[in-house]
Length: 164
Image 1 (cartoon, rainbow, N blue to C red):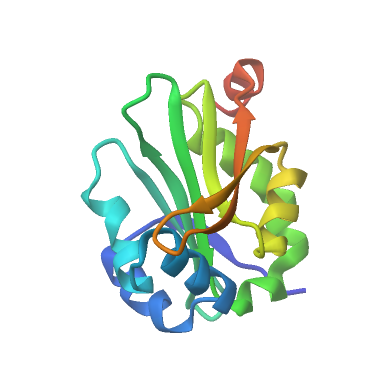
Image 2: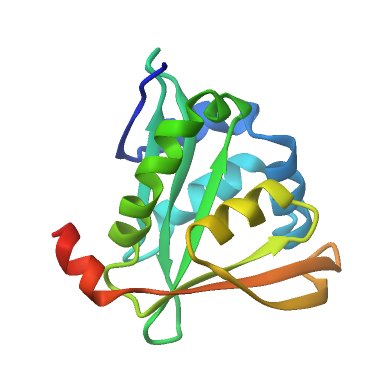
């Protein structure tokens, strides 16, 4: 079984991941913000209080990036993740470690949320596994005016204390 790891994200990681991003993620960022993969990966580095992590393969290649960003709504943070198809070679480890990382990136928030392309079924299934609820469908969201799902997770303060 392959073994990867997570570390603090770097700008160079965004440059490496952008050209090999999953097609569903590329389409989602195009539909939501009309941005390129590189721009979407670099944006969190420009935001105050953002947490950015990189998923590294056993070959020391960047295969995914994720994190949380601060919002103007007190208690709410935006959770995000963009990856390459290679991440699926680490599915078991990824699924085992995800709950820890969601708690870690949500420490400062009461809620984590995002808007997910309705067609990005892999992402929606993963978020449901992590305890996000599909709160509402927006028929015409973002630059592409396509259906997106608003997902929300209430952060468990007791679980966050266990992570520390």
